[in-house]
Amino acid sequence: MSLRNFITIVASPRPRVGKTLVARLLADFHLHNGRPIAAFDINPDDTALTQFLPDHSAPAEVAEINGQMALFDRLVADDGAQKIVDLGHPSFKPFFAVMKNIGLADELRRRGIAPVILFVATPDATSVEAFAALRDDFPNAALIAVHNEILGEAQHRDKFTASGPGSIPVHVAALAPGLRKVIDRRPFSFVDSRNTALLGIGLEPYNELQRWLRRVYVEFRELELRVLLSDLQSSLNVQS
Amino acid sequence: MSKPAVILVGADKGGVGKTTVARTLLDYFTAHQVPIRAFDTESPRGTLKRFHPNITEVVDVTEVGDQMKIFDTLGNAAANVTVIDIRAGLLSPTLRALSDIGLLDSAKKGQITFAVFHILGPSIASLEEIAETANVVGDANYFLVKNFINNTTFFEWDPSTYNSYFKRIPGASEITVPKLNEMACEQVEVASTPFVSFVANKDSRGEPANYSFVLRGYVRHWLGNVWGEFDRVQLMDLVTPKADNDVRQAAS
Image 1 (cartoon, rainbow over the protein chains, first blue to last red):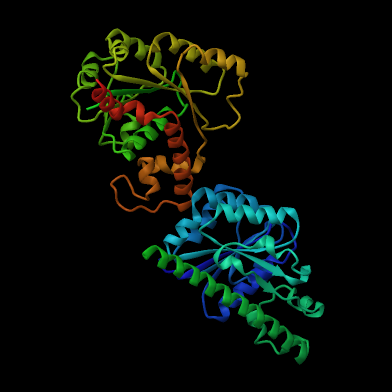
Image 2 (image 1 turned 120 degrees about the horizontal axis):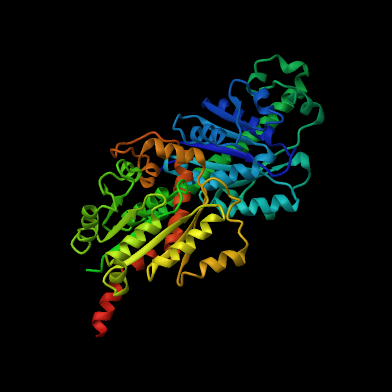
């Protein structure tokens, strides 16, 4: 079944590692490519993503059955939107428990939707174990580590590799502190920023921000190609 | 042609999920392509019949005419396995009635396979039900079913007390039916379809339906666990020991 759309779950069992930033960047990447998106903000204590992207994101929750139905039934819906889930760390376990229980990854593949888990990697044991557990529980999802270089050098990359597209992590380069402050002002949309006159920060910083953004886009584009290639390879193997 | 099998599903108390378990059995045998028929004793309007209308008949098991309908056709019926959903509170009386008409003797003589699925309630009183059933169940294959419908914290019986009751029925097996999410239960009830149809997103007429994927997933996962228990107690071998018969015939 050829993959037409992506659902990307940005996750980490740790707080404050840059999940929402990755979700925002991914949203912008899709919008930049003219694709409709729907983002789900599972962070009851701080709906940051919803505040950054009010037109495309809404809060969601997984603790109760009603929230689960509203979220997961929407995730499998064939509405042509690229879907992004910003999974707050308290909801990490319940979300993936439901996902496993209901067989979400298999159903998505059956509908031509690629399930992707972007795991923001940190060197602590909790993260290493959580990554390994996801690798075991979801062989049908593409599991890829994200190395957010603001957290430090990626000295632990060997513990966060998975098969197929997961063999190469996604890198988010560190952004200068001054620029970080700019992009963290809510609301802030990377797409809209192109229309605002230099954001009041001067030409050089503005250009630096755009260069950083482009590098992230390249990472996302290459990730997409790896997922599609891996899918093509498996369907060729089945046929031969 | 293997010998007929009769499975009684009963409880001495209402509301323990007896019909739910009967439904999982019907789906299990259908999935294994074993022809089955069911009798629903919830006269006049049976719950089981609502979910499996084509294979279920409503009967009054204390009525001689209906008894004949069930038991005289055991050897001839196209369906080899007969599942009888016994009305709440009637398990022990039904077993006594079956003993009276010689059914338990037939089972003893190996002419039919007879199994009892006794659905337990959470209170300590249900242990007494085991004792009562033990007096009449004889050599039937006896399955004690713990159905965790509402509360995952019941069945907190003292193990030695429980074992003392359990041991009164030699060869008894235990089956655990885990809890199914209430919303999922409710939606299946509203849909009035077998569990398997609900999971396949079909309505009661077999037409495509629009059930929640999440709820279908929960039901699929739960049903898989329940069928896993039936596999574990080798239920298929019990009701269709064809291979054994063939081997025995070849050996003799």
